[in-house]
Length: 280
Image (cartoon, rainbow, N blue to C red):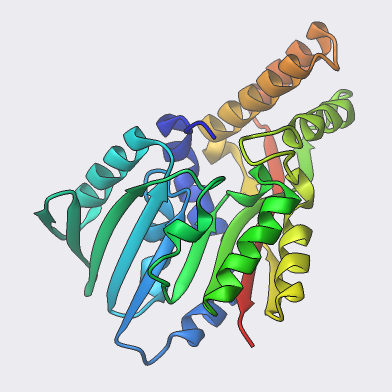
């Protein structure tokens, strides 16, 4: 799987953080409440946004293992986290940061998740997490992943898995065909086999229930307004690009839809689900 554009990751971070389901975050915090320390593996870490979105809900001492296939993103994540911290100490490639009363030790691991999920889960952590990852993965890979997590009897939490729901305002005649064409692109191989795409949230539920886990799923919609115009424009551009590559719609319809989404006053709601899976 190729890496993501850092500009896109920067644009979406604030919306990602405010969109996480608060009830599920509270339940996750309750699982580890009273513990002095926690070890976490973050899959497909990008620029470290998931750590920044979760750290306040976890114990005071944290050891994170950030995993990504893209070495450039890992290097950028190290710099992002160092700059975000209240204080930072480096030890080779590792960093230890202080942030709002929490001490967070971070290691960075370059690995191909499609080929070596068992390797990145050793030694076994207390929590495995990821954000905006599993819609890129195949149902078969998700099944193997759930088996690997269950074999270590650890907690799993993921946020912002795309579920296919989109509502754009004002409406455009091409909304439905654009969404159908985008979904067709979503299920192509992103490096893990044929992607689950919008069916990924349900695939996660099925896979973890088969492993005997108690599984809770909850909405985490992106609700984008005029203040999010740069993200709306980037999102529309990305959808238009994906649909153009699929050659399912004529160029004129795509261009008309894209131009409409760059107009002032556009809003949209993008469906995501968060999932918490607890071992029996």
